[in-house]
Length: 254
Image (cartoon, rainbow, N blue to C red; front, top):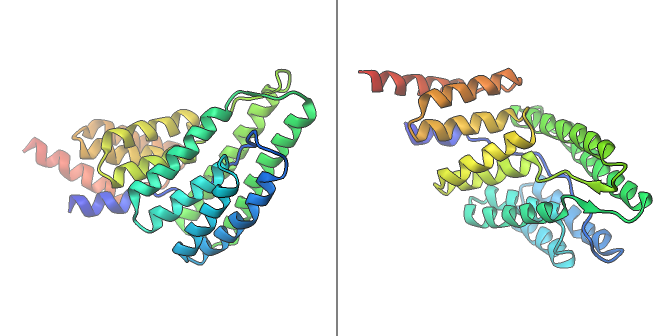
């Protein structure tokens, strides 16, 4: 019973990341987008092998393409190849960390980076808006809209310094946390879910997923508090998870 409940309540994050402009030769990222777009089409069609190949083709063209690594990770999650998914997510995380705080030489260069980031967020938002409005899709849209808002705010604050201090996106940390959870690495999953919350305090999925980690490690009071935090930001908590935590608390008190 415990394994079934835990597996059904962990959210595999569906929000696609915001690709950062890497320091690569002009035109490389543009060429990498062609196979990346093929990967997206195959991903939507659930043609996992074809999607993985296309995303890898994109990475082979541009090894700094964060979004391609992220989508490769999502594809591997769908294939239940969790160590491979974690590896792809870790590479995306490293690239975002390298990009954070990058100093741009001109206002025009920084503006192009800003426009590209926001355009890619908008493209993904439009993709989800055409999908069936499942709870996962609703959560994904909320994450994307939060990321768009935070990206705009961060860019506005950094105008005078020519930097983009955006850090690792919350949705990437959540995805990596879910990969670790599937691998049974609860300590690393906890770290990533907390990182997601630090990046986006409105990341309801991260609070809910963190509650599962707390539950599985016997910290039931922390699990209940994490679910309360998830509900406070408007996340729809799985009733089965609430009931499981309640039942475990009862079992411990008898």
